[in-house]
Length: 173
Image 1 (cartoon, rainbow, N blue to C red):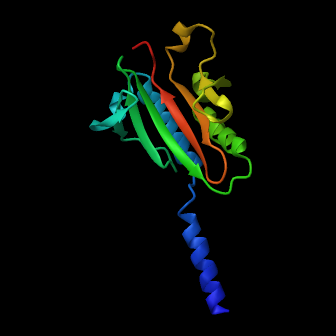
Image 2: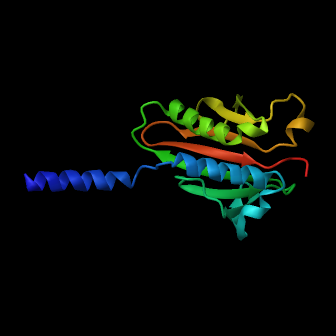
Image 3: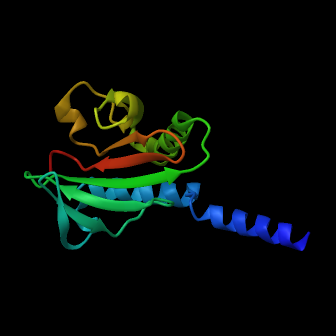
């Protein structure tokens, strides 16, 4: 009996290392910090010099790590526009789209005071070519470019599932 209990405890403790937990309040605080930083430039949350290259863009570590994320970094394109990217891996999620929706709603709660709204868009990078957006509601790119935007997409379906959160700084600095 002791052996079975020991094995059970070992399995339960060991399996928690493969799951990511998100502290909702810490996550929303981090999102708010990223929103405020991205109103000017995500340069303020870059951690040191470029640590590599991804698709021709410079890659930097970030001083802000979203709660529960596996990785967090900033990509800078040729026009010096920065995008913050955090990745998550979750095991034993029955409905991955619900997990994406959960993250989207946490972001929306944190940024609701700025007038951002939840929407959908297509992107070949994500499962089903679908991503959720949290951005300023306008058809005018000049208006939208004055506000940071967020994107959440499912990168890998299954067990484990992987999703990505992106924060885009304002376009018009």
